[in-house]
Length: 294
Image (cartoon, rainbow, N blue to C red; front, side, top):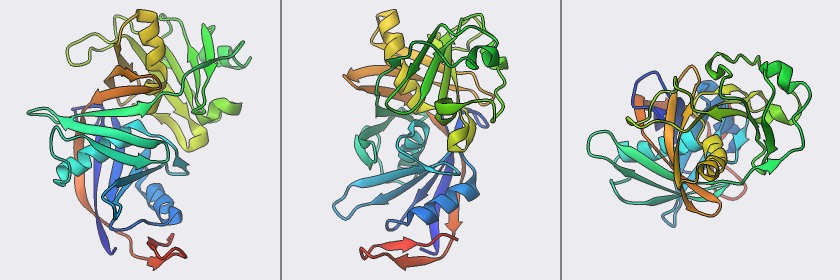
């Protein structure tokens, strides 16, 4: 494993220098968690996706932030699908399943000019909380309308549509308690919300997760998969368009496919394509070839 194919995809945006960056590394064999965590820390993307082909033909996928492994990541799943497509391992219009710590996730690539990816993610549902933490209203400079927790571990707060969401500044140390592991701040789309594929968006959000090593995640597929069913219910529609009003903007189409799952559709921009040089391979106690942390 002296050198490995790797690339960086700016997910959920067709434009360069927008969307959410994810590195994708194609492994020959399973690597140790320590080695993958060390490489993710060096690459410094919101998430780094690691792919390898199991002997039975299944594609395995894991995601790491610079500081920890996460159980679910939408934008790095999109990037992994585009990576396999770029490497000639995923034909257009051919569904493929990634096996992950959140179960099997189906992806497919379509589109004539710009490749479009659809990915189906679990949506664990929102759990009403009686009231938000007392510190949150003053921090947001507005009175929250609703506040939820979720089995995914994210907290979600609904703010009024007149709150200037794009201007919100949340220092990494400002969030407290469970909010640090993922806080979605969302509101109904406004007249200033950009369209997505020439269609108006229905809602917009921002996502902060300093507890996961991510002060702010630019475009977060797992957050949209979590909240999109609530917006579908409010609007009485089977699909909605979500926008992320961060400094690296992007959005996605969200569709209901079956209870507990949401299909996200978007594209990505290939920023760089190359090789990772990180020697240090060994064999673990199970006889797998692994790489040690450096």
